[in-house]
Length: 301
Figure 1 (cartoon, rainbow, N blue to C red):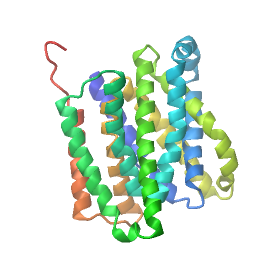
Figure 2: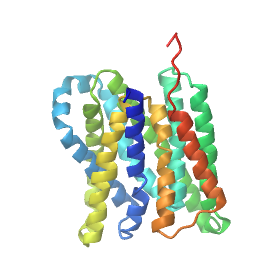
Figure 3: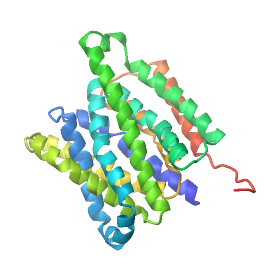
Figure 4: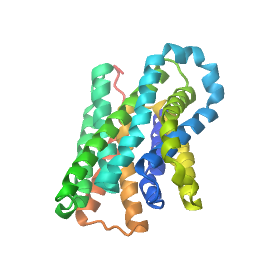
């Protein structure tokens, strides 16, 4: 398996795991979105750092040299889950997910274009355009007028805004982690240190809001699942992918996440998908195929 195919596969696995978070969170309604964010990314990030501790210790000098990237990425890691889960709370699971994840590839490409002076390929632009249309159809299906009328309109708008913040911070920590890897930091050290420090930043909020985690086994189980599987294992796979493919390609592949979230909502939460929604899902899958399809190398590459 070549590096690009392995990188794409690792990111697909990560997106599949992340797509379960919205449904899992609905199984513990007593947990606030802030608590879910803190237990998922806080404990998950610290667990990831512990698993990567040998690599982190052996890379301390390199991490010190890359401290600006590390601090920037860690702050983005701490902000991302707060914005993401609050977005789902105010705008709904489907809309919050598609806005957050759907905007990330565009922010990622903009960051790479401005900071790395990296050009955008026609293949990427075609895949991203189709993906944006797809997430627009998927989001539109869930934004019925009755859901956004009156006082709910401002809450919905806040959810969309927070989704954009989530997309920006997701793209930012993906870029900083990728940049550290390009600068010589091994994948496990770059991801483990970034998420470990970000997790530590979330601990005070977890202590303040985490009491409901201890009130029932179901709440504790949901919190444990979120920390171990989507956040820890998912980001281990994502880190392996980032070590092999560009951040803009990785974030484009994670458009698979809202597809998984929508399908789980249909089959496990009793939600329904209209033909428009299914069309959106089809376009997102098509965008993944276009974006991740191996590109023929030119002689000048």
